[in-house]
Amino acid sequence: MKPVTPYLTFYGNANEAIAFYEKTFRLENREMHKYGESDFPSPPEAADYIMHCHLTDGTFSIMLADSATPGESGTSNVAMMIDCESEEEVNRLYNALLEDGKVIMELQDTFWGAKYAKVSDKFGYTWDLNFEKRQAE
Image 1 (cartoon, rainbow, N blue to C red):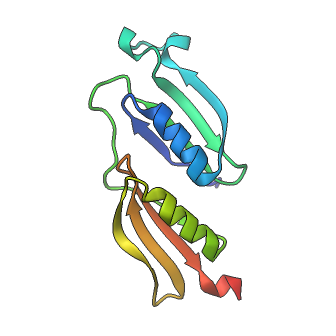
Image 2 (image 1 turned 135 degrees about the horizontal axis):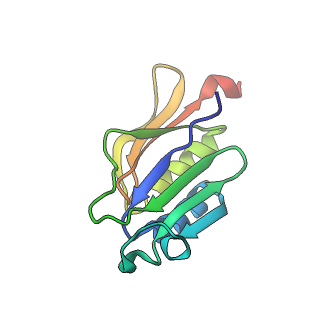
């Protein structure tokens, strides 16, 4: 099975999210299409909305889009889990995601030997950040 890629949905602010996630996760925009550039049925006011975007660094990927339907976006009941490769990375992501976001669980040492946190970013998406300290030994 190939890795699972989160597909995040917004309504009118996907461009802002693209800029935020590119910077936060150090991703490159590999592909982007707007509703107005396609034959996909959508209201005229959605012409500049993002129909599909793929951000990646070759290993980590996120896909996202604006919904053309008002009120159709979702941030609940799912969290994205990121296994970080270093303590520096978990600290950097924690601080970046908290930019206008909120803490659900403070970054802390855990009983399972990791440094772990849970945060909600400024778009309402939840991220679990985990760095297994044993892997660094």
